Length: 315
Image (cartoon, rainbow, N blue to C red; front, side, top):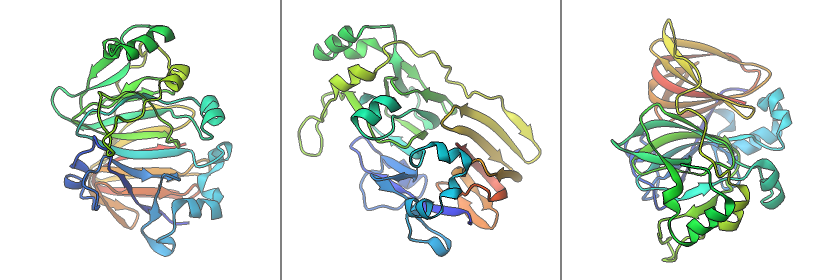
């Protein structure tokens, strides 16, 4: 199996902006490009293959016919394990929470959603919501939503380029306006909306809230994780790399390449390569900012060269 270049799927949610079109060069008939789903086998938006003999097929079709390309680690997942997005928030997203696997499988019939955000760029004074600013009870949670004082309890964090937020299932969160980020998450689209600033949807009506389910699954405490990447910056000849986060679901690192970077897709896991800046090549495939590549497990050694920044994800 060769390296697969993926066609992204776009979403035009009302809070989206134009950076994915203007800065990444994506083409779409949608007026807003809120999200680009860069690695997806989810039914709500599936990547198709751009290159080679499999061009035009969905990634799901390729995986179904060739399950070995997920690697040994993929066998422990019931279906494709992760979903990777680029997100451009021109306006604030709703305050929301995602359930864990047990609750989501029982209630929604899909995985829960643990995710991480890597801040690619942001406007000055941009901020997001990350958990609560103090521990509250489920009863107070419900009361604060009902009397419209809910935002008094949330933890607002000023962000900067390079910040890393690990958002475990059950963590209250919201991306703020003026933030561009990469999101690596479980393969789930289950979201419980808690607060939406009184906005109206495309139908002119307030968007649905999911308060009862949110109260069921939310961890009503302040976050404990740092917003720094987990690993130290490692400088090598021709590239530098840094571990962003590692958990039982995914391992994510950022690599800045000025010449050549060599790595491997072994028998354990496939490799996702998301290009976040620059131009170059991966083996013989020309790549640029905004490209997403799937390297099958057992592919062996691969080489990225050029002046380019990539986010590399393994399971």
